[in-house]
Length: 161
Figure: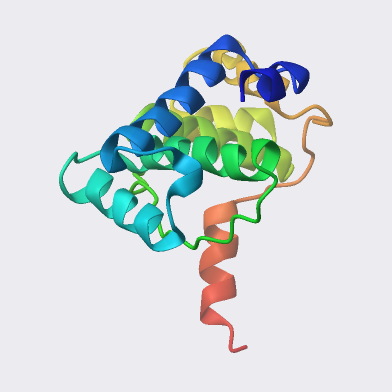
């Protein structure tokens, strides 16, 4: 198994992880992994989740190591369907009001709002503070017309589809 990983250029950390996964399977059943049945492999993963409380990422790593053994080393088909839940996605709470203000200003400039109008809306005393947002809008031409995305959204919402 080590030679197969070396030939494929796997990192030393991957070597350790995959070998540990295969050793864990062999230790659990007290026999060589090539003697373990598909049903036993499925039970092993149930054990990892329920009794060892491994994270989904750790289970996936074990699955990848065992899969590698069967496919690349033993040259056997590995058609075991093991459902490993993904970790719950969380919405990042980074930025807050400053990110919202930044996004608003950038979108207004991209829509063509004049810099002085945006300066007034943002409450900036110095226009140079507002000009800092223009580097996020590469094609900003210094808007000639009055644009208000909030008003446009309100108008679009009121019109029948």
